[in-house]
Image (cartoon, rainbow, N blue to C red):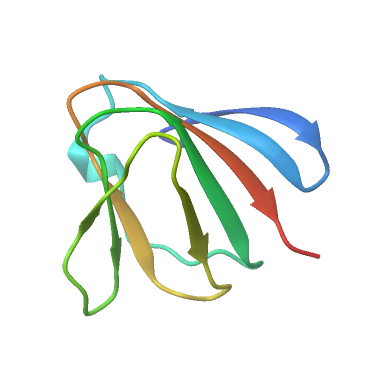
Length: 90
């Protein structure tokens, strides 16, 4: 399976992730990350972050979000491309 995003590595624990506007909704699956992550939304309109058993929350440009390791979550597609800065905790 091909990832629905592209990454630009800044360091071993810091990278930029881009989701193209053409990504299919079906590609944005529920998943868990191995490490805690801090996410900064650089750009993107209408995208949402949803945790298991919770309603989706709108992602806002310039805002930071925390995703605890092994927590089920997914991204819901918006109306533009999405760019995130992701820092994994050691």
